[in-house]
Length: 336
Ligand code: FES
Ligand SMILES: [Fe+2]
Image 1 (tube, rainbow, N blue to C red):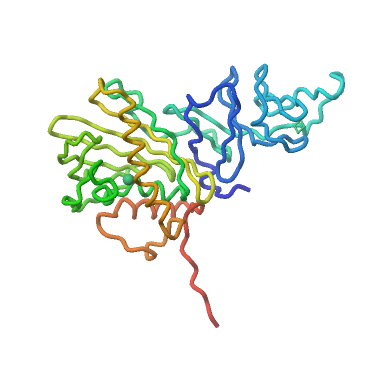
Image 2: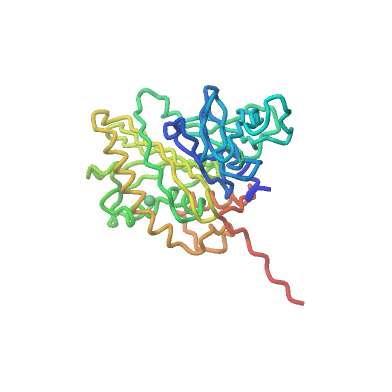
């Protein structure tokens, strides 16, 4: 059984597509060791374990579209079936149990996504929208993957937290003399939460141009969110898809797509460097938060009107029943 059946049945980001070469790549997802590899048929994901003697398949190699175990050379096809055991004559049958555990994987938005619990229904997978990725009026860059020693819900909530910009990112994104956040609301729309446009005195991208930007946050999934910042004075839009790989209860890796409809001549490196600076500013704060798991009981911490996006996020995680990296309402001790 997986650590969190809800997260295990949702697509989780595990790597950027461009990071996976012909070499098998080990990843930890919800405390499960998995291996990603590429064949002529596409992306494949197995449990990172050989059934023979438990070696990590990620130490092996891909040959003839098979994943070859590094220990005794057993070869597994993409459907998980072992098709070669070099130690026995080719005429001898391969035990039916000689199989690798296969997980569902797909590529979208330049990322590889994995579902540990297979979808039983035939219904077409609905993936959340990030239209900027394929919109020619935007340029999108991939931020460097960044690992937090913190729970995934804490990391996602930090991204959704509009109030910290003026302090944690003072001089990069925000200004502490303009910390007030006008009241706004959050709405459920079809399959996600969307905030009103929130006017924030901010700098979109670290160029030093402070003005009023209109922020819209969307909570797309337990481990995915997006942000749009619009400058209505010049029509510039900065958008971001923020997704988090929940590795261990208190260890998570962020993959983020940063999109802009302006400054096409500015080298992409500028935007990846800027995103790196911002996420490093967040790291010390998020890693300091107690309790380490996000409290879903709304009585557990103090909430203000500007925290409405976080309130929606905590409420949703509670409704979905996410427990990995979050702290569900503690049962009252009953004394007799
Ligand atoms: S452990 Fe994999 S082939 Fe023996
Ligand atoms: Fe931040």
